[in-house]
Length: 318
Ligand code: DON
View 1 (tube, rainbow, N blue to C red):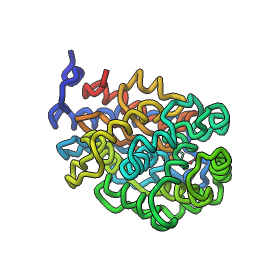
View 2 (view 1 turned 60 degrees about the vertical axis):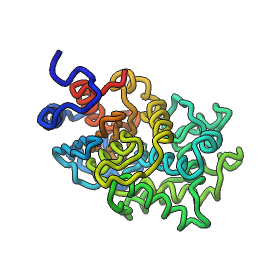
View 3 (view 1 turned 90 degrees about the horizontal axis):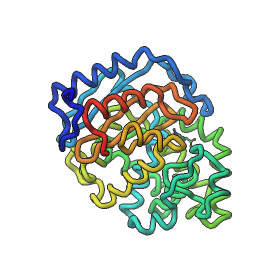
View 4 (view 1 turned 135 degrees about the vertical axis):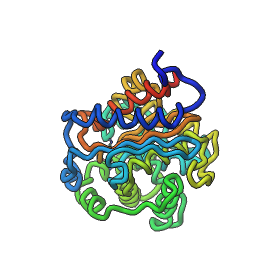
């Protein structure tokens, strides 16, 4: 077998990881498929050429190449981490009961999924379940709830994450569909705060700026049983972490989650600004950034890089 293809309990040695991360960047840089998201007007301005990769080991080692320090909005990659924070605050059992954990097999913003599923919210990775999860954030008012989310996500990243005001304003002006989803859930008794407040906080959480490096560290925190490998701060309990990874494996790439798990064999989560975060439990996290997306809203280069590195670093869980 090629070195690094056989799964061991650890990441391969640093020299191997460095050369494979660089090879992935060279290999997939020239790919020109996919389309930058434009349904949020501010995202349409992103250059399709931006391309960054970072691998973070549970020992805190970081391996970056390309635009790994370039900020972009976290978008749907916020969903598993907000679910994690709410599970930590409310208990995993209650969150599961109030949101659900099954696959929808449908697009991330599907309204039909709400109508077809008896539990309505479906799971925390699709917009319906994510907005419901955000509505469960503890706090006496919108400001406290937002603080809970922003500070919690910042602990995962190990630095204070900032709001991209332009992306937030752009999405807030065009997110009537999410406002509709929140109201529909309220009608079904499956939203747990004011719908406009929940949609607004959800829109803000999606507009937090991160880098591929941040996403690798956030992923490595989930890989490390809830301890940030760089700051060494415990962000959440290990048993709750395992549940978050299960939901990511089920629905992290939406209707393509089955194909993803079949090929990559790891829990992952995409965002429409072009981010993709993947977790190798016990080993580390992988963050990629490349704006062009496929039809399901998942980064084309991100998926190729992750498939390549999962195989060559021996990360596939199965
Ligand atoms: O709610 C939305 O439409 C965006 N804020 C997030 C969607 C997203 O990232 C879907 N992922 N690939």
